[in-house]
Length: 166
Image: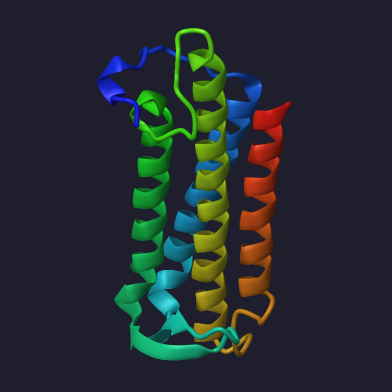
């Protein structure tokens, strides 16, 4: 395993794709926050806290728990975006040299930003559908969520592996 201290540390310039990933993610988080703020005063005292694999609520809590998915969303996305700025800290399946560092770091940073956006979309979906369940508009978040998550993760990994080979 290569020593992290021996890797070149580069400052990567963000492209329009990177800014798009960050911008869309930030906009989704802000919209999610504004929606929760708007609906919070009228929320029922009991809201869903957790959903089973069928998408049905299996745990309920007080309405203040509506902030938990937002806190998780903001914390996870911030961490992933911050980690994208430190690609030289991460593990790679090959040795990082001065010749391949910029390419490897750029791909890793972009993959992390895409993962960050995926997490934001997922947590926002859960948060907003939790509100819909609390208001009695729907009975759960749907059965398709878990298969879509597995498929999305697989597609992202396949894409990144394909990009590595090309």
